[in-house]
Image 1 (cartoon, rainbow, N blue to C red):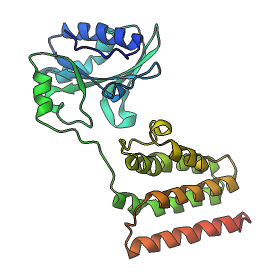
Image 2 (cartoon, rainbow, N blue to C red; image 1 turned 120 degrees about the horizontal axis):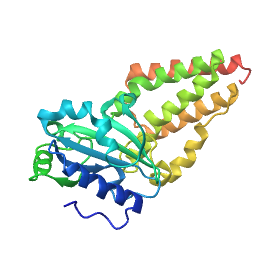
Image 3 (tube, one colour; image 1 turned 180 degrees about the vertical axis):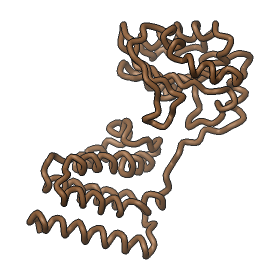
Image 4 (spheres, rainbow, N blue to C red; image 1 turned 90 degrees about the vertical axis):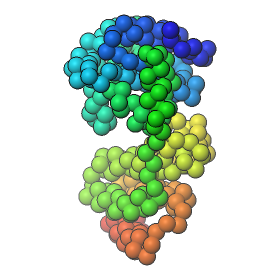
Length: 270
């Protein structure tokens, strides 16, 4: 029987889980099903997607992967689906079901690999506690980039963004400012707020004061505005980052800032 679902779960999500778990239970190749993401924190709403881990008997992993589209289609009215290579996870099948529209990520994982995870999923159903046993053998580890890792790269990234603005490649610059928010500013702010440093995900709720400040890093398709937003990104980075740089990194910062000033002169802004 499926584990008790939280009462706050939206009805479309509840119905999909009940139906899909009952269907997967009939497949002897499937060992268990677990839910991750916002299901774990009991924070799902009508706009949430479902993140499901489908644990597979190791001997059948290749077979299930080859036929996972058929497995997904058996769970509901599958409108479209594609694999997750673009996010570095080919085991994930990203699905859109209809009536009603519902986004569901199905991650087909060999039971041997279930212990390697970034969060502790909620086990919805399993055979003979096999999924729970494997989970107990490992520990969830969310990948966190150290301040040193960020500092080693940040000032090179500032120079790169400035070159794009200087050349007039403003769409590239706007895209790169987004990269800085997702890779640097958002994770640092979320970590400071005691939350999982996952890009800018839910930053409006988890770090609302910083989210207001982050608006300053948004830029229009205008060189001067891109330069302003880049300066704002640097200011926010300095406010978030502890003093980790060595003498070499300080020289990186000075050189990048001097170059940024040169680009501003190029546009007559200084």
